Each structure stands twice: as structure tokens, then as C-alpha cells.
Image 1 (cartoon, rainbow, N blue to C red):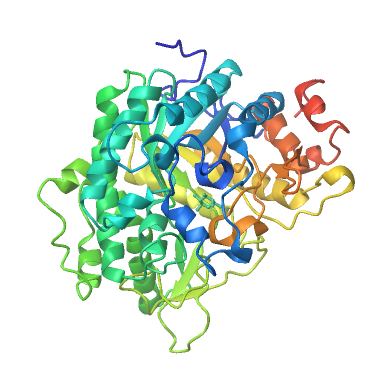
Image 2 (cartoon, helix red, strand yellow):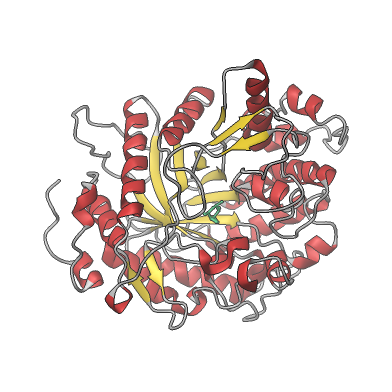
Length: 507
Ligand code: FCB
């Protein structure tokens, strides 16, 4: 068994100093996040078989410019360089995902050792660099064979997932302490099977609800399987993109729209996982689509596996109203489709909040992150929280040598981290923050057009070039003090060397 070096144990409750300075507690996990299909490439190497995202991205018209993850950032071959960059920048944690089709290509049977070897080597390199690894077991890349057998609407997929979770836990549990079962099951269920803007691209409302339930079941079965093979210090969480949904007005009709979308965006997962039930109102609102008879006795108790932390991904709030009868474009920020992902609430109207937008047309509103953290502080007292994704795409404008000065991203991060600090002062038990993303990467149906990275990837040469924000975040990770947004304005001419050496700037 590999010794786990000095990594932070999230079971210690942090204390926020009372002073006005935006200082975070010692041991706060400053990380970045990525996902396998978005960065790895090497889709046909070492026994990997196609996932639903390979099939989807290779289907004409599914992604912007027909982009695929065939090469992505070539992380599968450049992972040592990527870990070295994180180390030089002083980042303390790294959330990556394991590609199911690399480890268990058909979704059944024994693990492929070459697939596991890749992740073992990656984790060992991270640990040697003093970076705490966090493994997400499922970030949307279902083996195609399992989709051909029915995909997430089929109950068996949940059992296949649990088997896969056990295989990965057995292989990496001696060196990975922090685990996420699923990333954003909402996207898997409602974008994958409802609006069809994500793989596998199906548009079947009843199947979307079945998928949601089987993802809840998979989470519980997978967490149980993982727990049975992890050493005692293993910590299990899930990453939910719990929505922050606001009514356009205080009218009862708009508040009802808010309630319905909140149930479909958040409570359909958080209620089973935290409380072992579905909201009665959700069952009633969707009664015309399904009778939910796919929920079997014991499923909800399984889904309510005791978690060690709750992972939350936050980007932007959503504003909704009761339908106004006009047939305008849907502005829910999840891509274009004639089919709604909001199964049973297709009539709800979505509105663009006023103010600044990112390149995704998502509004910049840090108050939503504070609201989200306080909601789960109230709803799940005593459960530590991790922000497992937050970040922004902007139209980066490279200068000489491909360098990017990105004050908008720094301002976004500064605003959101101020909100995190405020939530902690208000009593939220937040243990870490994983910035999306380490690298520019394949942004699903948007392809390579949207850049979320702290590190720019030149897709012609695959060179990595840290943006100004990478240095700004480095200062935060090294000092625990939120730097002034202007602090990152003048990066060292040699970004990586500059980040690794030199004095730590005063707060
Ligand atoms: C989240 C996904 C992540 C990335 C960001 C921008 O929904 O989990 O893979 O695409 O959005």
C-alpha cells in the first residue's frame, strides 16, 4: 500500500478568522478541476473503447464546428507536464475524472490494467508533488456498450456503475482519499435524455426521469461499493450542479415556476441523496409523464448513503417566470434544442438576468454562490461542503507568445471567492474550492470555442501557457489570502518560473 503523504484531511473543521481580511483557514483545499473526456484525448489507446461522448461528438451537427475529444489537450500523454505546472503554481488539490471506457471498456467484467495504470501513475505524480488528488468516478463518459443496452434509463446501468466504482476504488483507494461518485447527474439525465444537447442525445422526457432515478440509485450503490473497499480515511462525495433559481417577480405564478424548476434542477437529486425521498410536488408535477413505478422498495434508502461532504458546482443563477404565452428562445443556458430539458415544466419561461455575462452567456452573480452554500448549510447541518466547480469562460485575447491577460476571469473569481468567504463567516463549513478549469478544454457541445482554463492551450501546438489568472490563483493558494484583483496584472515574464519562485506577495 502506498503511503499517502501529507495531504489535508477534510474532517478538520476550519475556522474563519474574524478580522476583515479575506483570509481562508489553514488547510483549505485550493484546487482545480478537469474531466477525462474534456482533456485526455488518446481515445483509441491502451484498450479504451468509445463512450457516448465519442459517438455523440462524431455525429454531424452535435458539437460546434464538429469538434471531438479525439485529441483534446492530449493530457493522456502530457500529464507529467500538467502536474508540474500545478506544482509550480502552488495549487494544493486536483479533481480529475476516471474514464470508465478506459478502465472497463464494455462496462462489464474485469478492469483493464493499462487503464488503471494511467490513473495510478497520475495520482502518484500528484502525491509526489504535494497535490491532493480527488477522483470523480463518472463525468459523463458512459461506455457506448452500456448505452446500447439502454443507458441510464435502464436500471442495470446503476449496477454496472457500482461494479465499476468498486474496481476503481480497489485500484486507487490506497492513494486517493477524496472521491466523487457522479458529476452533475442533472446534465446526464436531462441534457442527455431530455433536450438531447449532451450525449447520448435522446429526447425522451420519461426516459430522462428514469435516468435521474437510476443515477440516484447508482450514486447510492456506487458509494456503498466504494465504502466497502476504501480504507478508513476515504471520503465520499458527489458533485451536484444544484441550481440557484429565482422568480422573476413575487407573483404566486412566478414563485410556482421557481418551485417547479428547483425541484427538477436540484431536489430531484439532493432530496434522495440527503433525505431518502423525492419531493411529493415533483411526483405530482410529472404525473402526466411517468408514474415513477421504476422506483423500487429500498432504492431511496440506498441513494441516501451517508456522505462525508457535499460537492457543489456553481456558475450562475437562473431567473424564471410562469409562461407568458410568447414563444421566445429558451434562455436556460444549456444549449439550443427544440426539446426542453425541464421535463414536466416545459412551459416555464427563462430570463436573462441583467448585468455582465460570460462567454457562455451565463450571468456573473456571486450572490448565487453564497445563497447556494447557505441553503445546504441549513438543509444538511454538519455536512461539510466542497465547491467542486466554479469558474468562467471569457473571450481570451492572446498577446505576444500566446500570453493571456484575463482580468475578467480574475474579477469573476475574486467576486465568487469573496462570496465563499462571506458564506463561511455566516457559518457555512466549506473545506475547499476546485476552480474549473486547470486547462482550456473540450467544452462539450460547444467544442473548443469556450475557454475556461487558468492555463491556455494552443490547440495547434498543444503548448500550455498560464494566463494571468493562473498566477493570481497561485498567490491565493500559497497565502490563503484573497489577492486584490489587480495583483495578477503584471505576471512575471516567465510565468511558470515566476510562479514557482520569488517572494510571496503581501496581502
Ligand atoms: C459543468 C461541467 C464541466 C464543465 C463546466 C463548464 O457543467 O461539469 O465539465 O463543462 O460545466
